[in-house]
Image 1 (cartoon, rainbow, N blue to C red):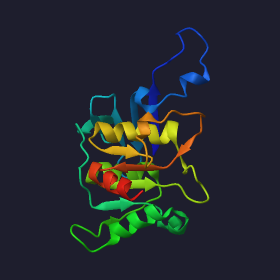
Image 2: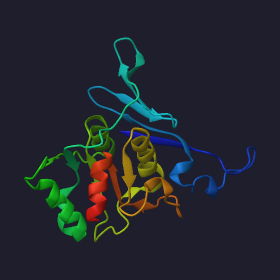
Image 3: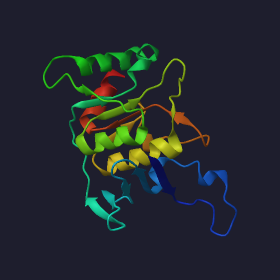
Length: 200
């Protein structure tokens, strides 16, 4: 998949673009989206007024609105994380993963992990769930990039009624200090993200 976002320009039009135009918090995005490629290809995007999904129909050579006003379920039943890193996660993250596996109430949750950020997030958006890529002892700042991976998906998640956090702070409010800055992320169904934050 391919992720994109558009930010407001800070420097005056007609002047040279500066690094400040890029180092903006996600709340300054004016549009964000992704294209998911596969047996069917979709464009999912927001301009700050909800989320819409368009599917490519190759038989007529057009894109049509297949998923208007997309909403993520407040409660999901799927968690998505690379459990191969389990021993590298903080204890709070490990406790949350164990919680997801407990046979109690509406748990255990199903585990699904494709290893493709866009595909894993898209499943959570469509069916409800949580995707998370926490910090590890090898990558204490996380793996995913704030500006061009986490911010666009966080805008989409929030516009669809979900939530996105680094475990301490709303993703869209993080002030970036460098272009390729990384961050942990917990994103998806609002109540599942809140559950994860309680453990972290």
